[in-house]
Image 1 (cartoon, rainbow, N blue to C red):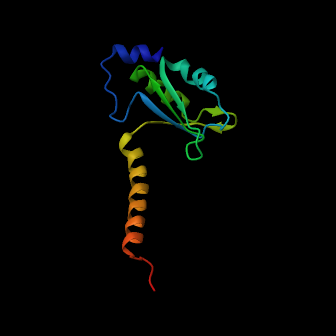
Image 2: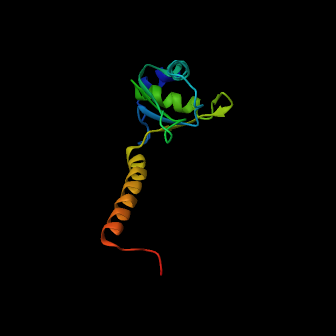
Image 3: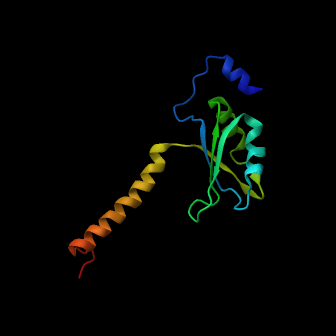
Length: 124
């Protein structure tokens, strides 16, 4: 019911609020149906992507149809206990996620260039 009051008022949301949520600390064996049951209580869901690779296990992206539903989900589900694990629910921030990826990519590029030109950073 709080989402209705948020929509009617001329409420201004913080800039980090987003329709896309990044969820961490999920049980590795959680199913899509369980995710829809947990997150669907707070509004219509457009998409859920659960991480399956070694690096992304225990994480998921949840995309809501409405930004106010996403805000309500973050407010209610941060710290929610699922299979003895406390969920970490954050707004997805493209800049922060891509920085981690870019850093790894840059380090790999530097290693390739050092190998190509025979440059070593280790003192001899």
